Length: 119
Image (cartoon, rainbow, N blue to C red):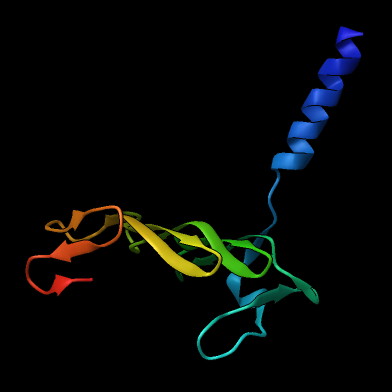
């Protein structure tokens, strides 16, 4: 019985935790000027889109739920250093967790750049 439960648990974890990863160029935006609504193979996209630099280095990853950005989004510089890490909720930018700017102060709602003011 324990063996069956173990196999079932591993199967559920593997199937439930595997997210679709798709090159961003393969997504189709059927939204409007103010809100993107991304589709993949004629269905609202659920998963992670990504882009890469010409050298093969990962450039960005965006999480989507029901065609909208939802969850963490990350961008890297071409040398692999983290540029940006933020979070979206229902297609709207929610929080900034990291900015490549060395002098940025991050709060729950926005960040302030002492050279340019609030963002």
